[in-house]
Amino acid sequence: MDVSPRLTVYHANQCAPKRCTGLKLKRFGLARVVNRIRFLPKRAIVLNPFSEIAFSPSDKERLKDFGLVALDCSWEHAEKVILKHVKGTSRCLPILFAGNPVNYGKATKLNTVEALAAGLYISGFKERAQSILSIFSWGHSFLEINNILLEKYATAKSSLEIVQIQNELIKDRSS
Image (cartoon, rainbow, N blue to C red):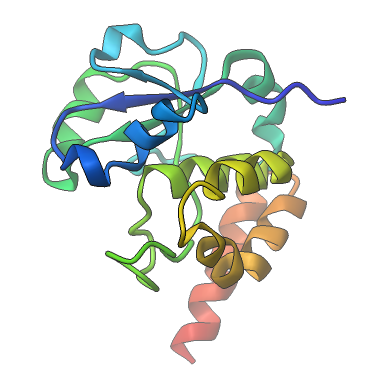
């Protein structure tokens, strides 16, 4: 049996607490929330939209050993926070579409729980991804609209293969 990775959310207090998916994960005991970057687990994989390395199934062992981190902060301030202060193994998620009501159908506009679920799903923890999404009424939407992409990404062997899948998606959409 696979050990499910520890989930940590860096919460920058830049959102409405009642709508915050990271805080709801904490309330349900599904993730640890920290308010200081220095409290992030060392050697964990940090989902970082500015990383030049794509998240892939090859990250599974590091995920199991050290956990997965999502950064819950405003996109306007994210680059400052992430580039200057976040240490660890950064990975960017491949192209996926939001299933949440605020950004439904928009590419790369995932909220915190969607980002964590994507990382879990791609690395082979599909049941855990479904579990964390299940506490949201719209959670199933994320998996439904991204099903084909998530399955393709989950079969990739490396970050390079993830990028190739992404490039095919972009090429197909532009033609």
